[in-house]
Length: 274
Ligand code: MF3
Ligand code: CO
Ligand code: CO
Image 1 (spheres, rainbow, N blue to C red):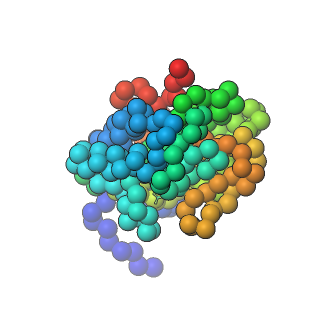
Image 2: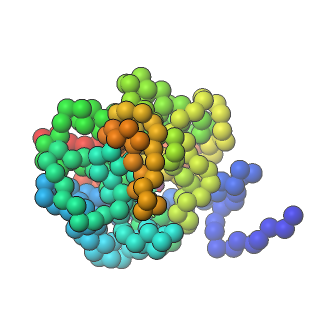
């Protein structure tokens, strides 16, 4: 079998095709992740009833440019926006548009930027106006599910351990984990092996090694897990119309755990309830 020479990428590949990055590559991911997280920090004051998701995306487009970064989503498989904005029962890949947010709407804003060739991919939840009790619970459980997944990251653990940690945390709380979308390897490419499942059996899947970079981005539904994609070919919604939430971090495997590349510099990642 012939292998194409790839002399631009650093590190080497595991037999599952997962890139093991060099220690110096963490700095590139850290810089890209910080730009993405800072952009999400700036979104917060622009979320209110009457605001459109299109205006939020327009601001994000400006901020990406201001940061000297490139949007990874504009032009990606024909996608035309700098963010995905997924409101209420939209699970992911919501397309920003003219519709106005209403009081109590919850929304995920997902941004991926490229800085010096490295990808920073992160998303978090916001609320327009007043957060209902049931939405608050969904958002909190989804955030905590992501963090439980990240706590499972260390060399020697498996990807199944991450999925199992997330799934059991969510299902113990009578919510469901979306199966139709997953996290992904990233680095100098946007979507790379492996698929990072948010459900699974402990001990299954590839073994984590130092230098792997990937996202964890669980989507959690108040109702059933099933989704469908609308006719625009992007927007994924819950089949039962139940509320859905998502949080996403880009992480790297360190000698003793995980480095989170997309921490909020302003400490705004965890939803705050006022
Ligand atoms: N940022 C999303 C992810 O977490 C991917 C969005 S692709 C787009 O992987 F084209 F819809 F923007
Ligand atoms: Co992602
Ligand atoms: Co994303």
